[in-house]
Image (cartoon, rainbow, N blue to C red; front, side, top):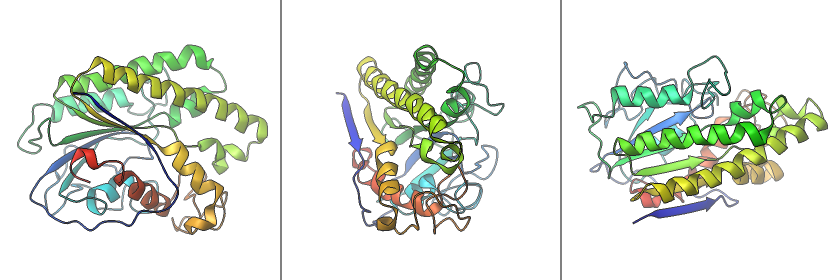
Length: 293
C-alpha cells in the first residue's frame, strides 16, 4: 500500500513533546546542504542510545548557532529513540555534473550511505520498518543556477537525478521518506539586499523548482510501491514566520544576529537555531506515520 502525506505547515509552535521511551530504535538518515548538516563524520563516533547524534556534539557543526532541525527531531521532538546519521554537506547541490558547487553533492552523499550503511552493519542495523530517509536539497542549485540557466531546461534534469537518488535508497530497502521543499531564500538578507529585480528572478526560479519537486515526489510514490512518504512544505512554514516574525519571538524578518535567536537569520543566508526549533516542532506533527515522532 502506498501512503502519501502532503504536509502544509501551519502557523504556530506545537509544544515539544518529551522523549517518552527508548525501547524502539529509529534510524534517521539525512541528506542535503548547510540547512541540514551537522558535520557528521561517517568514520567517527556512531550514534548510540546515550549519544544519538554520534558526532560531533549536539549543537555543533551546524549553520544555526546551535541545534538544527535534525538535532531537534533526534533529541527533543520525538516519542522514541532516534539515531541520526546525517550525511548532509554545507554548500551541496544535488549533482555537481548539473550544478557544480565544488563540494560533495547529494549524489555522493547517497553513494556514501550505500558504501557504509546500506548493508545494515552492526553500527546501524536498520530495517525497512525503522529507517527514515530525509532529503532537503535545492537551495544551492537555485542560488548558483538561477541567473544563468533556463529553469525549464535545467530543473527537469535535476529532478530526474533527484528521483534516481531516492530510488537508490528504495532499492537498498528504504521505505520511509520525507522530502522538504526549498524555503523562501529569496527573502534572505543575502538575496534581498541585491535588490527587487534579483529577488524576483530568484523567487521565480525557486517556485519552478518547488513545483517540479512536488511532481517528482508524486511520481516517485507511483513508481515505487510500499512507501510511506511525507512532503513537508518548508516554503510555507518559513513564509509564515517571515510574514509575522514578532509572533514567533523575532525582532523582524530581515535582521541578522549570530546569537541564533534574536533574529530569524543567524547570518545573511541561514536561519538560526530558534527558527530550526520552530520548524522541527511543526515537522514532528506531520511525521507520526513514521513511528518515532
